[in-house]
Length: 233
Image 1 (cartoon, rainbow, N blue to C red):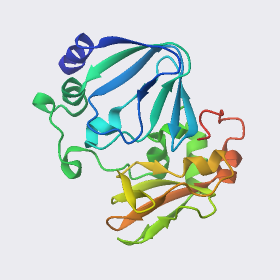
Image 2 (cartoon, rainbow, N blue to C red):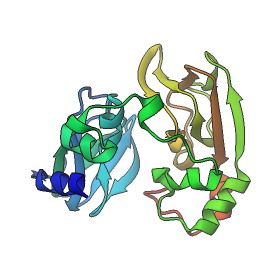
Image 3 (cartoon, rainbow, N blue to C red):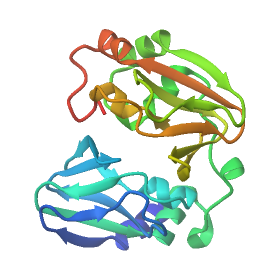
Image 4 (tube, rainbow, N blue to C red):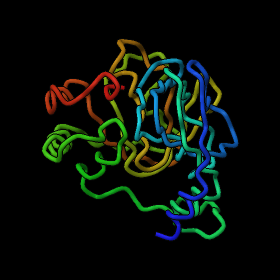
């Protein structure tokens, strides 16, 4: 509670005009976490609209927790009123580490939940779904293991599945350039669930990785009315 009260006291209001980018994909050295107080914003990955944020939403935590480049661009759809939290205050509140330092990902963060339904609950794409829908999705999904150095998906190939990383780490490549890394509970393949386009990037295991995957039909079968355009990313 003390950490939360300190974090709340250090929030800084930020006004963003419509059309302006708050954060940009692949931008290094992330320094702030954001809460949306008023207005709406678009989330874009590789130029594709994958989600829409409104009041009560938040973004920017991943780049702070893992010291990685921004994974997406967030652009104001309307004028935005945000509350921004600096890196040190965010980390102190989120990780309970004095001084706001980043703990080692192998020791400072909880492992992925053992039950697939509980794992799916932490995926932003699926937030808001009822427990019954999550359990149905877990039953419809598949698990697979990919060895270090092997590709999970390849840029340009047909796309039809969405993946959640259960264990291990992987890298995302655009051509030969590594653009970001993925760790436990991270997900990828969202664009395949919304757009009929080939894969926009290659994902390759940096270590042996265990994955949980779902196809679009499984998502719609489990909750045909449960996904808005913003969620089917």
